[in-house]
Image 1: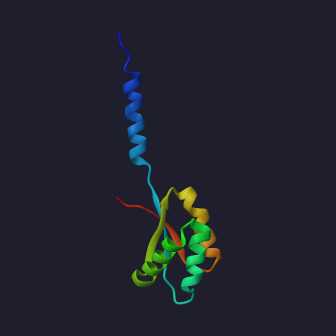
Image 2: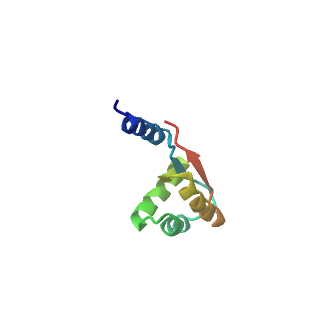
Image 3: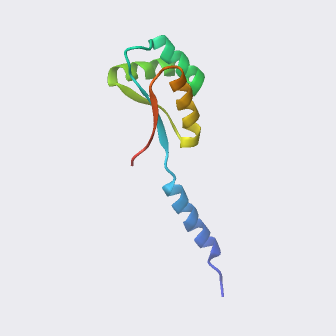
Length: 97
């Protein structure tokens, strides 16, 4: 009799991959922080290039918020805390499919 252990393992792996949720680091617009401060923060905290941080800051300004980073909660939470420590509003939100 042949065992189907290998097939069962693959099926379990697919289920785990499908249920893993990702999150977004959202930065919110305000009337207090300057473009320069937001750009500097995104470069230092999120590792963005100057151009990427500048584009994000314009989107934040005109749209009211923007997802500046996507990933796992455990990776984004310390970044969110660092942004909040700099006086910029940020949240980590689960991506809803």
